[in-house]
Image 1 (cartoon, rainbow, N blue to C red):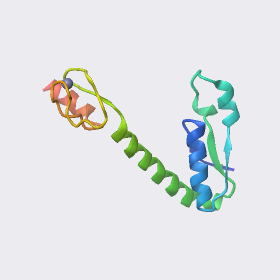
Image 2: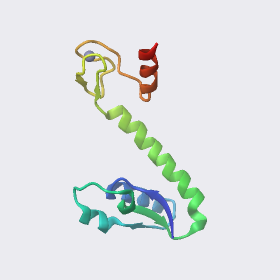
Image 3: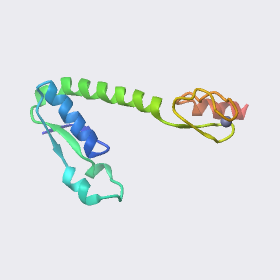
Image 4: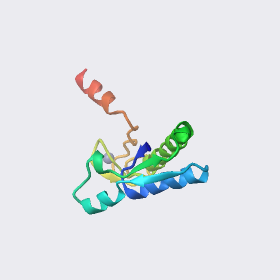
Length: 121
Ligand SMILES: [Zn+2]
């Protein structure tokens, strides 16, 4: 077996498996039961549900499909996540481009380093 993806939760593992199945790639989910037993205690990477391929020859195609799916999911979640205003600390709905309280623009994702650099100068 060849693990193609370590999922954050069983739902993600099933999404990946369904995606691969659509493309005719057979896979299995391992560790799913272990995680259920783990409950709400958080999970270490070693017990996260994993999607494993039955046929290694599918690995490269599966990798591309999974990467594409994850990239789309990330793009969607960054659009839909509420954000906290860096200026006044107010939480803003994901649809707002400006803070509803002080009109500070929504921070660009991944700009943390820039903020630190600006503070140092
Ligand atoms: Zn604000």
